[in-house]
Image (cartoon, rainbow, N blue to C red):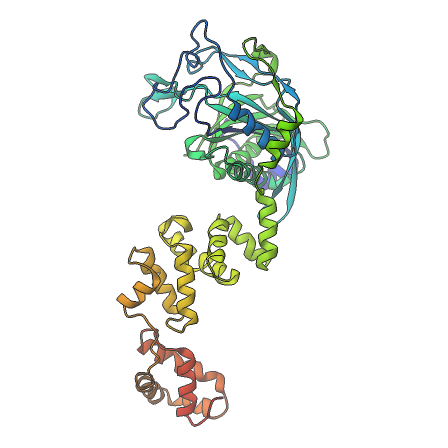
Length: 502
């Protein structure tokens, strides 16, 4: 069996049941680091945001960041966890060049939040409950940059160490084993991380930008034969940093492990690394168990004690959480399940809500953001909120349509010009003379041409097949560049053909 041999996904899940375990690391957006007063900032010059504590100098003492603790409590409450009245930090020992102390200050046996759950909604509306083992506080390690053509450790001539990230506050959310997802395991993994990201953003405790590593996922995958009760040997794919990659990584590991097990070979428990270019995982080190880290209580930090008054104060500060907000808005807007799900999946819920608040109807807001604006975004490979079209623009567009100044066809043109930076909808209509042509004299001239050019259609209409009138309206619209008032054109056509206002 070669390292790259895989089974087709359908064959893999037909033979084996996948079991997931997802560990999400959330970098907090506190002003300073977890145990020092060094700035917690992204993108600064390497090794400038460090203190003696971050460098692990002899004799220095850490101090716990209270804001980070409060962020962890809020997240624990949002994840339906029990908040420990007393939790402790521990030293997790392993050598890494970007970990100057040779240990990571983390929580192990006494995590601050334990035994929670979160409901995850899949794309078709199916809800899957994921149980959470714990959410604990710890510090991040620094960052290694491998110097070489590939930028990877295997072909690097040397590595550079940046300790700006060392000591940045982290919350690690560890799920309990997740069986039962079957062929939807990749989708569930992706949706779970999206759900946690949405909650973190709603709480305001992290920027959660996955491309910056603010939120990262370690995906544990194991397989067991259909009907088996005992979990298989797991692998852990480290630091996957996009939602799409999480789904691909889980799917690849299912296919890879299935190929190994199907020929009677064992899966090796190990960490693996995601390769975005090839959409494969590659082996890292043999996976360590807790005993290998030689955990022991951190002697330089006192326990965190959370009394009921503090807990109640933080619980009162929680905002409306994403799932509750979605349910409320869907009920208020009266949209169909499919229409509302399209808005959520397009990450357009905020902008649609802002458009409705600004004065548009829910139907109109959904129509424009998920219709023409989404088309423009897809054509330029950007998000709907990155085109320069605002909720106020959509409201103004609807006002112009309601007033009869433009029709839907012209409105689509107007949006394209707004996205090109030509101004507001009203300014575009004025500068490009895009207003609807409703002058009867101009319309009559175009109607006369359409009637003269289509005698067969005229005969059908006069014979009673009034639905054929569309074949005459079309040429009039074309002759006026789409600017004619279609309703007025229809009315004038019937009058010209001696049929009244049929």
